[in-house]
Image 1 (cartoon, rainbow, N blue to C red):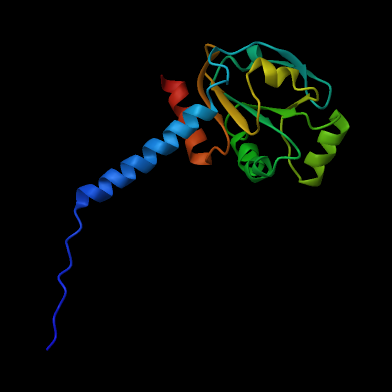
Image 2: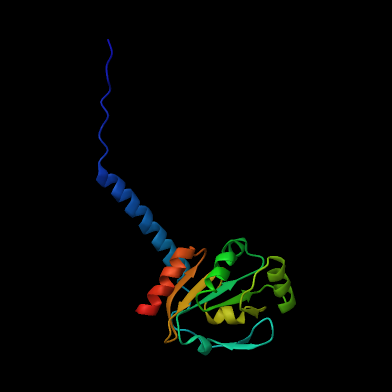
Length: 171
């Protein structure tokens, strides 16, 4: 005699609830990580690129721009740097090397990895502190009016950055 065990049908709403819970937790963690990052008007600064040329945020006022804090010693930053470089081909991008040594050391790191980026060296973390950056990578999108419209600490998926830059242009 064989008996078949009846399977209880899974309710689709349970799956939806579990997915919503996971998304909610991820969004809460992201918000918690970004809690100390600057918001509102982007703090203005004057810096020097690795080649010695001066740079300010005001130079990027015509389009939304990406301001990206990273470090040579950060494995997640290494994972992102190729996409950040590709993004700089179509959007204004300024990066800040936080506590990564001298300008020569940062330049050597970029040369070794065959990366060309607009980089401001921040050896003591003073610029990062103005933006509330305590960990890298940290990313900001600044609209043409100088307002921070997006901020994130941690890995930023390339499609998300492209979408948010596009959105900043139209909102």
